[in-house]
Length: 271
Image 1 (cartoon, rainbow, N blue to C red):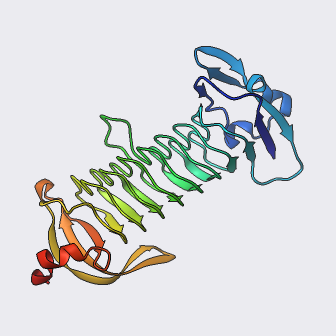
Image 2 (image 1 turned 180 degrees about the horizontal axis):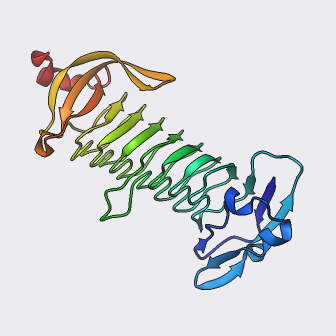
């Protein structure tokens, strides 16, 4: 295992896609130390920014001890191995991830898991905006794998989801699941406005309070529980909404009946 410890508090963004188990594999400590990173507009070596140590423990592949909230693209495109970050992590963590596991014992910044294909990201804190979402102008969101967030997530999370599972144990900001076509999102607490806008497929489950139900969704029934993945189901009962009808969508939005009594007078008569 390689242990990285920041040598200072980073004031400028650090581009560090070289911090990746696939890149480290088969390299000596000296070779890892000479890998290229960028601090602001200056090219540097990894050893200029991190203390680098090797231990006999095999897993995880890489451990980072300290605040790396300004360090971006850690684990970008990784296919194997495991990264553990004991602190906050920067933008684009696990972008285009195709396997392996990333664990963050802290918070993550924007675009965590963007365009993710496989693997697992566990965040034992909050995730910022655009979790698992593509850049603006792109419709290629997360396609597979799983992301688990113990805390809250920001706005525009799970946008353009094409597959995989996102589990949010806290609250979700506005525009959750915008333009989702496949995959599953489960919010254990509350979800913000414009939930599932432009949805055409997939599944969103909200066990807490919803800010609103868009008028382009129609109620289709009720369900006692909903399957999240092969290992877990969410207990209801839930209202079942279909939409987004403005996009001729056939996605399913499950909203807790017990947490949303305000919806009863509007929709119960149609069940």
